[in-house]
Length: 94
Image 1 (cartoon, one colour):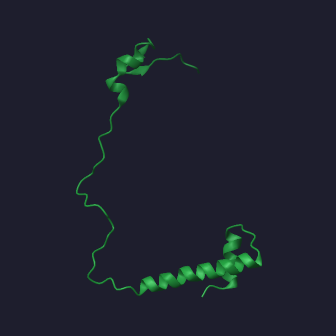
Image 2 (spheres, helix red, strand yellow):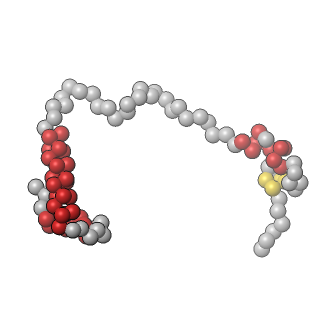
């Protein structure tokens, strides 16, 4: 059972200023959540498979990384003028 001390500590950690009505409501709500968790603890789960991955993925479905500048290098670097190995050359600032 969650009590007044726990609510006060949570409010303090959360930097909340609660009215007496809010403390009472929060106590009721949190107690309902904890009661539901207790019901879940009693649920029969023997023989059921885990559902840690909802999709049957056997391999990585992400695409390979590509650099869009490489395929369009001339298009982007031509107007710049000074380039070196695919990089833009600029004046030294230090």
